[in-house]
Image (cartoon, rainbow, N blue to C red):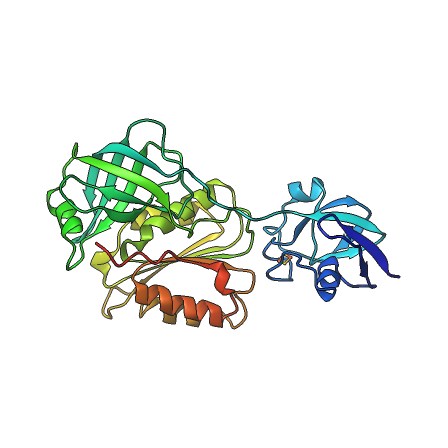
Length: 334
Ligand code: FES
């Protein structure tokens, strides 16, 4: 039996054939219904069931929680109408529209965590800077040109964390690593960037960090876990050699406490300790992801441009949509 489904956002109802899902019928009629995976794993087609009855085909628990189900939400890609229905899809657009501000601050701590990377904590005055996890700021130290660095902490704190890696030509990063000290003034302007965590997305997440590109990835990871996201999260952290790894204990502890988190460290130089993977991140991804298995997934990438581009190419090859690979291309400065 065919049922009629009225979708609040569309001007005419759709006819849904027997054993057809609401999403299938909508797409067949060329309606622009939000979806990614079509298989009940990304949550993008979350929809409010306003009236009528549906049967839901199996779906991943992280795509639609029991609480959401009780509140009347369904997944259009899994929903088979059992009567005429009225629905409205959830608007999952997540703009990060935070006001650009400039805050005065001072270095509260500087922790040289490897031979060339320092974690800088900056205490700012006034209300904390609003930003979305994954965005970046422009830091200005007296007498030096401003530089862009990603927030490594979760939003909402007056103490901001940044990871600064010394680059071969980078006067600012060299200064920070060699000479910066507690109390030095810093101006923080931001936020900037579009590669931020989409908290309404429920599909699997790949986090790809190269070197100090771990900063925004850490912010995204911390925020995702604090927000209670339960989908699988795989963090790949690539560096040249073991001496370049940092925050090992922090990440191991998070992974031990978070059943949905897997952390994979990859060294690009051979000859590291046994147990750690070697090679480049793109090859690791290619080996780990079955073809087409990235459907419904989002990825957040930060690191050297060549790493970001090669990993992005692999992810797209494996089925992830280009618009679901989030990366800000500023990691060339120092
Ligand atoms: Fe329905 Fe992904 S499109 S859960």
